[in-house]
Length: 348
Image (cartoon, rainbow, N blue to C red; front, side):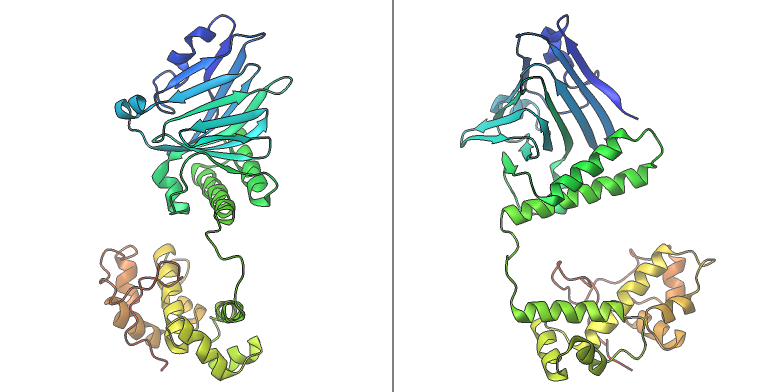
């Protein structure tokens, strides 16, 4: 359920510095906050907490100002990032490097560990923003690169529109969504924002080579047909319209072989399935066949060879992650099978 973080009018707006963080100073971080004394003063900030994050809708008939200085940072080292979705009016952000404007439809990213001044300027009638506060390490779990503060992502990107819509739905929910569902929607929205930010900062190459596109097709084909025990290089090559020799070349670009790739995928998915399923709902044999093994015995031998536990023991450990041996050789983190040992993964 949403709660009122603070509400200001002509009678109490001079107390804004004492109330903008909530009754117990539970939101935001220290700084100087003030409201322009011009015309009608009507400011309302409502909050919806989801885990360590908060969605805050702020509406104002007045211009608002917030300044965070180095002195504030020394006194309060809370490291939060805020994603501001501008709905009405303009957000003006300025720091030692200059100023930026975010207009309706735009996204502004601010961070508490950088001194800045932000102005929430109304249009003819009002200002409105929907913003998400989160620990910076939470944002970095979605996008590892340091994007700095005061980043403006221009409106028009479909990821931003969809993310704002999802966050608005979570904010407006009156308790029908469970905590886990609300968190899932939040994580997805943050992921969409991260994609838009990557595109803006050119953190991903805009063009792929022909070999890259072909490799994507190969990986997709293997993923789709992973449960087929007859999956082979000939089958993949035929399905992707390439020769077996070219398939081997593509897999060498990934520094793997067909056998390693297939068995790593099968074992990774089986391990995940074992850890997340109830033995009363699905048996080990069904999991083995579901990921493409020809027999449960073969599955059990391969699983124990790689992880040091047979599937039944792994399930008995409640997921067994802590009991698994350290990987012999880790893959790059952007690969879907990172952390699986490569040794002895041969077709039998």
